[in-house]
Each structure stands twice: as structure tokens, then as C-alpha cells.
Image (cartoon, rainbow, N blue to C red):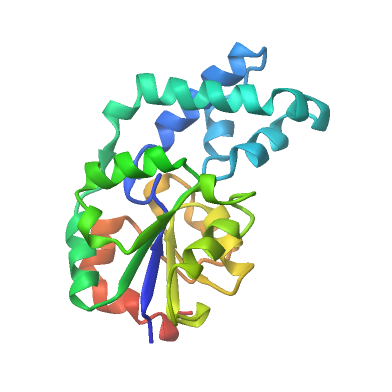
Length: 224
């Protein structure tokens, strides 16, 4: 029986993936690297250290990772944050979940200040039971630390009583490392096949589709 749901944020609850890809592109260009936006987009959802490490050499990553990350974060906030919109029916989905007396935790590779901003944007502050961010852990996705931290906020709830909802293969990969099952959304722009190969137990379009199929998606013991 499901007792809690852990939600990713960027690409899952808010439509921000394209903006993050553009901000990463600008950050890399500032330091002399030019990557196609689609290549960067395919990396969104990873911890910044892993994202940069997959694109640069180990030596370059060690030297520039912090600076490139800081540039991305500031550029994103200054140029795109006010353009980010919630996906439809997130609040209504959360209200349905809370009506069933289930716990909701946010787990994101974003920083704490971004999570607080998104809570207000989504109007869900009173509907969640906790949140964990990249500030709370040593490593983020595709390592499982974010989800482990989220799980630890749930008293007397075991991994098999939790669903993760995310939009990237990195959510599913990270969650699986600690025995959590992931339902993936197409709203982040990843292909259905990519998500299937990452062992998402079910795939839906977006939060509105989850709400439309609410009883089905909660019955994860039958679908995965």
C-alpha cells in the first residue's frame, strides 16, 4: 500500500527544462565551450557536477565546475525564472493526494531557495510534508542521495510504500539504487523509450494526466 509520493520539481511540476538548457549553454559559452542545446537538454535532471563531468574532461571539470554552475544558476534566475510556469493541475493533484492522507515530499537537484520559490509558484506550500534539495546532500541524481534524504523525512514508511514521480531517466536510475519505483512523465521532454529503458514502471504525459488517472497511478503494485 502506498503511503507517500516523492516528486521531482523541474520538468515534473514546472515547465523549466528548456530554460535550464539555455542557461547551461550560456554558462558553457562564457568559459569557451559551445554545446548544442539539445545535447545540454538531455543532461537536465543531473547534479551539476555530473552534468559538467559528462561534457568536459576530468581536469576541466575540477577546474571549472563551480564557476560554470554558479554562472548557470545566476543566469537562470536573472533571465528565466520569472518565465517558468507550473504545469496544469499540479495543485489539484496534490489536493487529491492529501485527501487520501498520503505524504508528499519534494526532491530536487535544485537549490533550497529555488524549491522555496517553486512552492509559492505552485501554491502547494501547505500541501507538502517536506522537501530536500541539492544543498542537503553530497551528490545528487543520478546518485540516490536526494531520494534517500527524502525517504528519511518519512517516519515509519518503507521504500516499497513510496512512489517517485519524475521526468528524467536520472530520477528513475537514482531511485532504483535505494529500492524506490519511479513513475515518469513526458513533460520534461525525454522520449518514452528513454524513460522505459531507465526502468520507469509507468509513463504518463504530465501532472494533469496523473490526476486524470489518479486511482490507476496509485495502484503501482499492479503496474510495477
